[in-house]
Length: 295
Image 1 (spheres, helix red, strand yellow):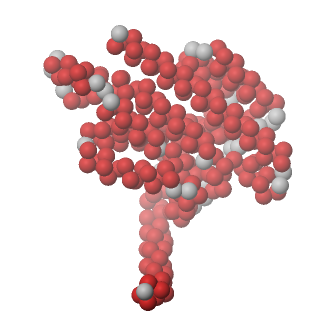
Image 2 (cartoon, one colour; image 1 turned 135 degrees about the vertical axis):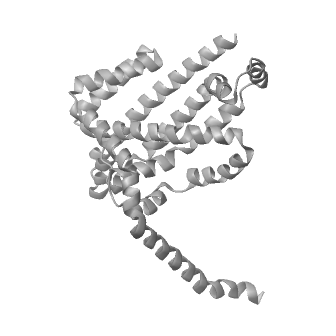
Image 3 (cartoon, helix red, strand yellow; image 1 turned 60 degrees about the horizontal axis):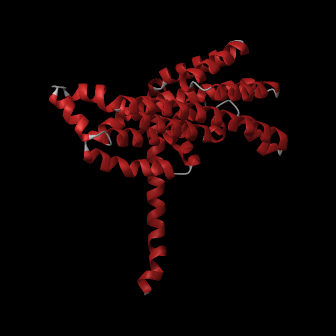
């Protein structure tokens, strides 16, 4: 058993050397290619700034009306719309309107980015088993890795600001939409696909006209989970410069302001409930349309 007791001491120096080499390699990489990555993410930065300016710059009745209109179009449920109006008016009354709009802008941009990235990857995973086998453990790591860990490479590569925080949020939030896009497409009934093939559909036509419409309720469930995970990163992302409701919560933690933290925490919960109820209602509507189409 001597080898077992000596094993940690024998490899400690070697392990330390390996970690130092990896750290130095990543620092060299960030120094060499940091500017390239900043330029690559410039459109995302412009999108984020434009969304934030619109949400905070427009008169609050216009912004409120637009949010409630979108909630109605998605859910067709007056109770959800009235609940959203009450929550947003209370948030405004308590003086958290601007921070709330910044948070909503960040969630919208992060969700759209996650959809743009996640749905194509999910489609590829559904078509190629080997891709799915490789992707599955990667998504497992992305979903189980502590959220603070995402900040380290992002900050080293891009510094502190809106874009690094947004990238960290997207990395954390994108796995559900990838998984459920893959699952939804694979769950499409084989007989339906055979019927599409019998009518001479090409693979692209079968995907666009059959598989994606039938998988849409499942994909929307993934979008719902992506939104919830993005909201859970609000406070963490505030540590690297993302403005919104997370920064007052972080300030309350540092200064021990109980009411400031609680009020902003409840505002985050309110936004989460609004997004959750609206996206779930939209998913149920899609499910009903699917059942009617099959019926």
